[in-house]
Length: 121
Image (cartoon, rainbow, N blue to C red):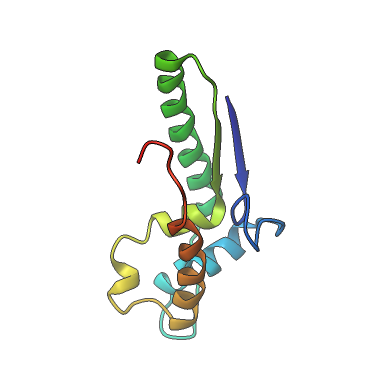
């Protein structure tokens, strides 16, 4: 098993960017959810994107280990800080709480994830 955590995905136009928690919080829109008002983004009190990327990676590795028991094959698991930040939005991003500048960045990143091909679809 191999777990690889990047800042903004492993392929695509942002793949070479370095990943920092606060940048991932901003670009995923999380800072606008903790803001005191429009135009006042605030970081979450802990490095949430770092922590969630690790947790998402562990979940992926556990799923890959179960698959290995069934198939005998190993796997590479990819996750990212930006993906982790977007994974915790729930409905807030659609409820008018996010700064529209952040939502534009989120939409740009999400479009890349929507094109993910699956072998067992």
